[in-house]
Image (cartoon, rainbow over all chains, first blue to last red; front, side, top):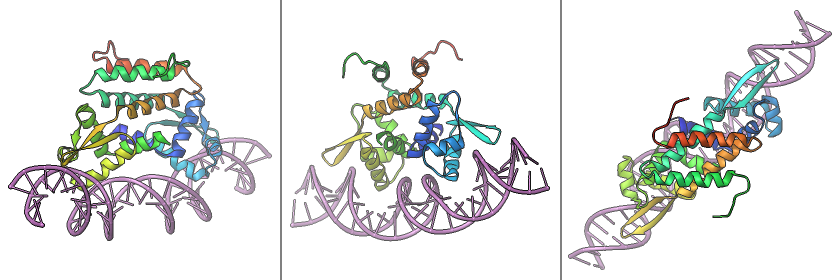
Length: 115
Length: 115
DNA sequence: ACATCGTTTCAATAGTTCTCGAAACATCGA
DNA sequence: TCGATGTTTCGAGAACTATTGAAACGATGT
């Protein structure tokens, strides 16, 4: 299943950090070397992690000269989020609204009031 | 990190299925035996999986006579969803709105029009 | 006290994932 | 063509995860 692959890919310190950096660096992306440097990881180890993120559809890569530039694929996370919400809701649709409300609070910078 | 533990817990066929069943069975929950039966998993294997879900904060358990009843903890998923969305947004807040819009489409049963 | 039922713990095995040195590959500039 | 640079692939070891038979535990009814 798609969702499982995405969650396994993100359920690891280094890869989660990489994805976060790439999301932040959107839409330009970062080269493999730059990513390795930022996370203080050897290049070959990082290459393995990037391959996993790529197989999960969380990043894409394009060569640019000698470098290979990685970019976060936002739809992948969007899909996972939708899946998770549906997971919780299936059979209990009224809970979905609830989740979304909470999300809005979490996002809309200054949340009006706690709880 | 909290999010990693939750994603590792859910990044496994059986456990994801268990969590889905429990979410669907909310707010009553299901006994360990009932869960094992529904997923055709031996009781001891299931016990190990339930322990993992429990450690991740995704389920709670309470004894009821001889049975132990497990319930899904919705806030755990809600927290994960919020985390993922923030992950994508941090530095690019304009993308958040976009994700939420898509979520709404995914949820509001009849989506108006496919992209 | 006993047998029974539902569940967990223990111990062992098989499989998977993480990590990294070394080697290979691709691109570039000279 | 050569050397340098950025990246991936290979191979191996260590660490973790999943699964299961057997044994233990806790609650119940008699």
